[in-house]
Amino acid sequence: MRRRFTIGSLVATAALILGYGASAYAATPPTASFAVTSDWGGGFEGKVTVKAGSAALSSWKVEFDVPSGTTINSAWDADMAKNGTHYTFTNKSWNGSLAAGAAVSFGLTGAPGGAKVLNCTINGANAASNACSARLPGCGIPGTAGNRIAPARTARSASTRTG
Image (cartoon, rainbow, N blue to C red; front, side):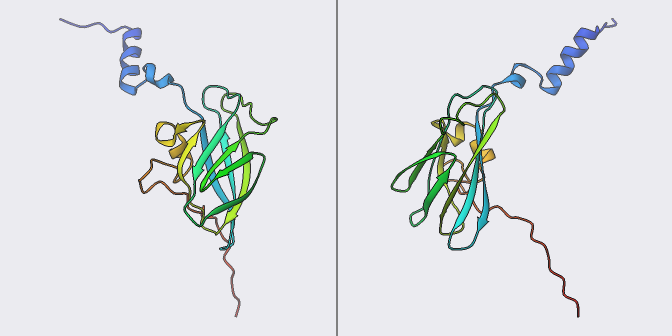
C-alpha cells in the first residue's frame, strides 16, 4: 500500500524533528551580564547589563555575594545596598521599566582587582533557574566552578619594537 503525504503532514513532521513544538515558544527570563571594564590590580570597574526576557519588566533587582575581603565601593545608575558581603542593586526610578527584550546597564567600582561574584540572583530567582548563569559568567549555581566572575579578557594592542 502506498502512503500519501500532504504538505501539512510533512510540515508537522519537520516541526517535530526540528523541535518547533510548544517549547520553542517558552517564555525567556530576564538576564544579567557582567563585564570588567577596567582592572588595575588594586581595584576594578564593572558594568552589569540587565535585559528583560520575553516579558516586560516594571522593575529589576540584581543580588550577589562577594568573597571576604572584596568590597564594592560605589555604583551608578542603580541603588546599592550592602549587608556584609551581600550586595543588592535595584533600578532607579527612571530605568526600571523595560520592554520585552530591552536592556539597561549600571556601573560599579570595587576592590581589590579580579572581581568575583557568588550566589547571583535576578529579581529573586536563583541564577540556576534562569539565564543569569549563562549571561553572567561565573554567576551560577552555588558550589560550582562557574560560580565566579573573572575579569573579562580584553584585546590588548601589541607594541612593536623597531631595532
